[in-house]
Length: 429
Ligand code: 3PG
Ligand code: MG
Image 1: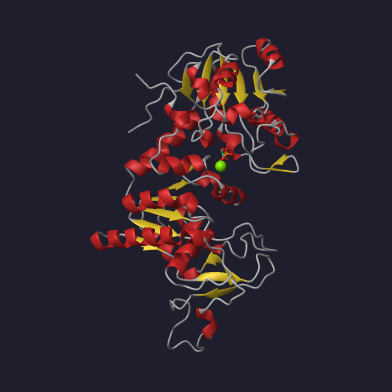
Image 2 (image 1 turned 60 degrees about the horizontal axis):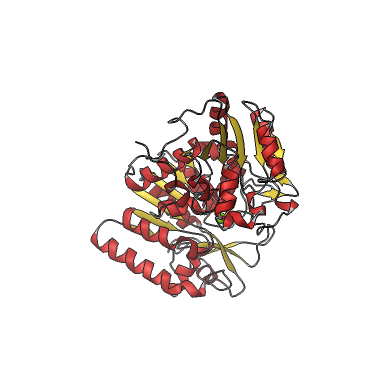
């Protein structure tokens, strides 16, 4: 099913004052934006509206300031970055509602842009307060939802505001929902899902959905450790989730039942890179938790030491090993579509010389395979959140078919949930 909501292309916006909800929740370090992917992805809608000679009032949240003004979470750096990227003036308003904002907006000319201060400086935003939504709405003639990353929240600026203004989708929202929905509903098969990250809790629904619809599901990251423990493997000092062992067991049972009935693979890591610290100078080694994939080769000149099959008590699994990574890379070569959400190892640790960190090689091989470096190139969909950080840092965002700007929102959409910020928009006739 294709996107059935009206977009900015379906209505006349000429000279109108348009309230745009963006997701400019970007990471900041010492007041500087460390990843501007979300801002860049908002540009097509902004440029389209400028070409319509509209007046653009843009609003967003940043972080979780808990309903109080806090300079640490100001959108001011975003206004600066937006101005640079657009090469167009962007006025910054120091609040998102109130008399001063109203005056500023009243003084706008066609083609002017105002970015409002963080919506979450008011507790009414997350409470989806109708009075607050009405006040926001009173600034404009039309509401445009383009903040895909936040449409899984029913807040004043995503759901509430749509009760007071004609409300349509922006181009980013349309592309995100369209692409992700198509991949889930009519993928080029075989469909493969690679799910990593730290916590199973965030990914339970998506795992169930992929076991239902995919041909191959590979697990990595700290999340995989919980499955390994559920299988009876000693993961020593590795991070894992004690409270989710039964969830992991249920998922494995479901996967095994599917594999009995039809060709289906549910792959857990069979080897890993371990170290006793998360540190770029900590020595790493390979372990295969007695699955004998590392070096159990009879005629090899040197027998592998027994330690290669056991994780020592002080060690943690920090990446999938080369056997597991190659197995996944091989499956990618046979896939029509790959959905990837979550790194399979600790990718934040930088190496001294190597562009790839000591525990990022598993993720790196997966990325190379997805991008066709091994020959075949499947359609690639990358889920948002931390995964994007790694891909951005490696300068590879533009190389994938689609890199989502949404973390939670893309997971919920993939899981088959309705997104309140999308549902609230007007349907196409
Ligand atoms: C995100 O980055 O996940 C979105 O911007 C939503 O933010 P939230 O999780 O704080 O609601
Ligand atoms: Mg979030």
